[in-house]
Length: 389
Ligand code: MG
Image 1 (tube, protein in one colour):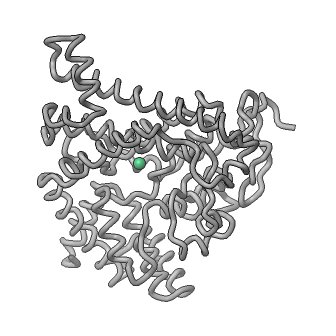
Image 2 (cartoon, rainbow, N blue to C red):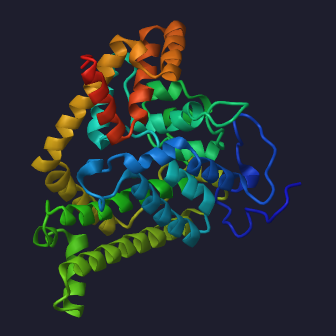
Image 3 (cartoon, rainbow, N blue to C red):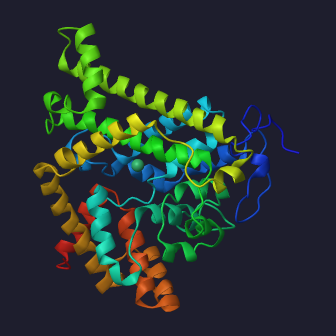
């Protein structure tokens, strides 16, 4: 018997109860004083992929300024929102937190530009998808245990990390891939983590975009979610400085959508009454979600950010330069694996002898994807001094 309190106490029947967990790939004895999802969270925080998130781009390239979100601060904001929602709905907080903290572990340097370039480099060898890479990091790439590769996380955490997946990839993933083939849902903690991600980036990108001067308050007032809170704050605090105004609005926007998410999801749960996490998985659609009106507003903000911020010429310019750096790194390592650090070179050679050039390409992609923004620039400079790029 494990010492310490029962982690399932106080949770709803539809939550991920540890008593019903599908467990770990390599069975382990329970740990005293910690539940299994707490252990998953702790393993993620101690992983080296997690520490590297601090120097990876969210939207703004890491060296553009110290105040912008990086993947690490983004992941912490996601976790904080996820935990609030999980707690309000009597779901497992440690599981929700673990999924949120791990969701971007497989991200390349340079944000989505990096993902697109690496996917293009890998197009003949199965492609590259950051979401699948997050799973690969926790299942295979982390080297922290004597007895197995990866972090050996529970099925439920891995289920939540793998948000989407092509059918071809799903077929390679056994039990974890089955839901994509059979069109089933993940547990509620995974659904909440996914929405917490969207809430976090929509709101912090408003904040970062305003700080960078790429979008203005006047433009954002046209967007309902922002406009509504702007009207409240401007009426209540006339003459407020724009910095405080922005933070006051963004904080209210987060509160507004989080409250909507909790209340709408609670309504659906009261209606559907799933008796267990298995019942949640077999429902025809996701249970966690916004009300129709808020969903539409959330999409409106997302579209605004896509056209005005993510495609802003200043963002595009740094993005295409950074993308070229990754493309050249990939090409140089593919051509000559001896340019890789010893452990990656050994992995590349082993994977090549097991599965040919696709194996070599996957090892190179693992190495490049694991880089931070600044390490990618350093490696590029090193290869360039050798005349390799
Ligand atoms: Mg994210």
